[in-house]
Image 1 (cartoon, helix red, strand yellow):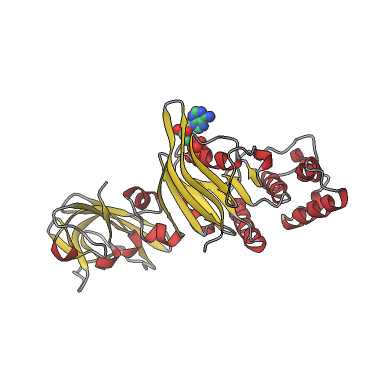
Image 2 (cartoon, rainbow, N blue to C red; image 1 turned 90 degrees about the vertical axis):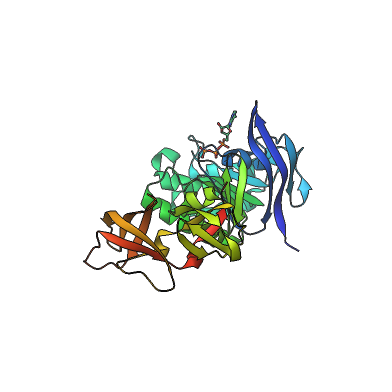
Length: 350
Ligand SMILES: Nc1ncnc2c1ncn2[C@@H]1O[C@H](COP(=O)(O)OP(=O)(O)OP(=O)(O)O)[C@@H](O)[C@H]1O
């Protein structure tokens, strides 16, 4: 049986009349790195705050290690939350910031010192014990905030867009550090972000949210290659969404072009097929055994490792096509968009 550190059952939350979390059911395996991914305002932070105990759900149950935490205040739950804006105590040095929670819990001094030293070492902050927050860079302060959370040995570490204030390069390196530490310690982490590349690169599982609803839970590969809804297909990476009609024998028709769908379809029903730009080739000739759609090239961008083509088909639909290792000759004029039928992921049109 799966070992769930945390379960959310039928969670609903309203702010006044607006229903911001809608019937959320999620189970989190111990030791996993889970990401909440979705556009601004979809409810990621609200969910995290309910887990931490800063908000109460209006309906539903939150179980931490199998126990309902409804009546347990934030400080009584063994969760630690790291906020976007770090929230370090400005008048305390690094050591005092990190040891604060242990002092409040009255952990004996020698044990406390050892735990703080360990957390600082892990976050590569050993030489900075005496510094104050205003004497540190954003990335260093961020690491102090994570050390302060880690030192509490939380059952679940909750991270709310913790890297959003860092520049791109630093974000990348702290990302790698975080994931390494999480794996080394076997930590259970919930990480909130609206950055899909962050979610895909760090997570064991991604929860995609929109308007307070869970659209999909899956591994990064499932989310990318097998999106369950149009929203997920569109939100994760770049894709071409074409409107198709179900036919017999699990075929679908895009205009006059008919091809086989890997997912079952009902004749006469409307669907959407998602075809990734990297799954398509542009060719001057029709390609044998593939789906061929007649287009003309309207624009192109040379990006070094690839050329991104923008083409328009006879139904006036624009496609994005990425051709890798393009060489020096760029294509122009009329051309076919070609792809294997199984590269089109067919989902319901809703
Ligand atoms: N305290 C509050 N009172 C009223 N409405 C709120 C409150 N907190 C959040 N909301 C609303 O609830 C919805 C969800 O907000 P939430 O902060 O959880 O979204 P989010 O996905 O974390 O967004 P972001 O990525 O911008 O932080 C939004 O429509 C927001 O305006």
